[in-house]
Image (cartoon, rainbow, N blue to C red; front, side, top):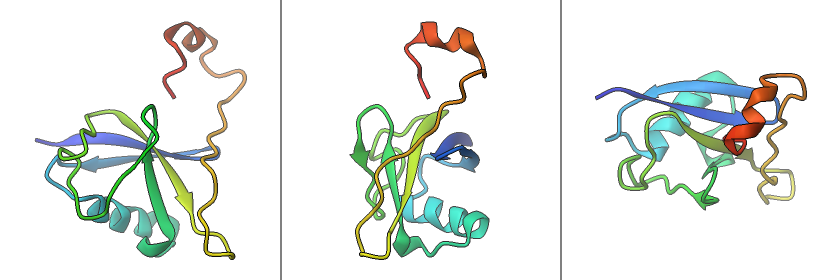
Length: 103
């Protein structure tokens, strides 16, 4: 069964079509094509729980559901990963403030 996840980094959102049986590594390989960053330099974090998603586990294993928001962070020069940085637009869907800000 196909599903979509929203992968966010700074001001960019990638909508990734995937299947619950795909691994996090599979998702990183799809992102590699889009962002030209090796999978080893990518970290995916489930927004809401803050859980770092493990490459060898499937989306279903880690309870990533359809329309989930996942943060993408990249490895910096010092070999550490950057902090989650998702910029929420000021003037975009002001009414979303009432729903708890599920970004």
